[in-house]
Length: 169
Image 1 (cartoon, rainbow, N blue to C red):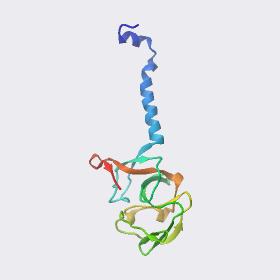
Image 2: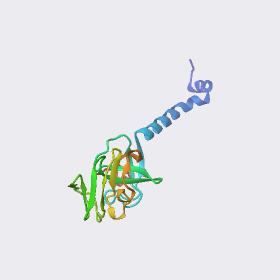
Image 3: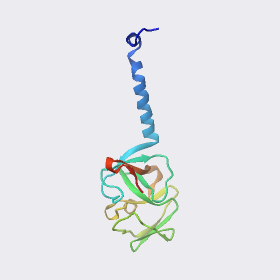
Image 4: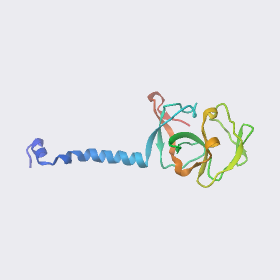
């Protein structure tokens, strides 16, 4: 019909050329909104697993298990912590040890201070979370259990810095 692309372009409205860009934008927006999104570690509370300013890939619709690292919103900030207690668990802290349903926690991720006292039984939509670097972590020992609706998702993929890209435990 048209002998060259220039002739075809002249007859198309200007907005037709924008359609591929709009489609790409919508797909990226949907993926980021509903599947995964980036998050940044803020502070030393997850050391030695994660360090300040490392970027993570957060999966939004995954089952949350014990020892998973999650990102949740608290007081207008996003925090990164490890799940220690699941819904309906009873968490008891005494003498620097953590017990989950009367069984001592095999706490392989933490460094230094395990200070906590008291007992809490989690509701159906609550999780008990702790930072790996307990001495400097603001976690469930201070803020209480984290409700399911506060959780953005789980993460086990570091995407920045480039030298540290990959999965972690």
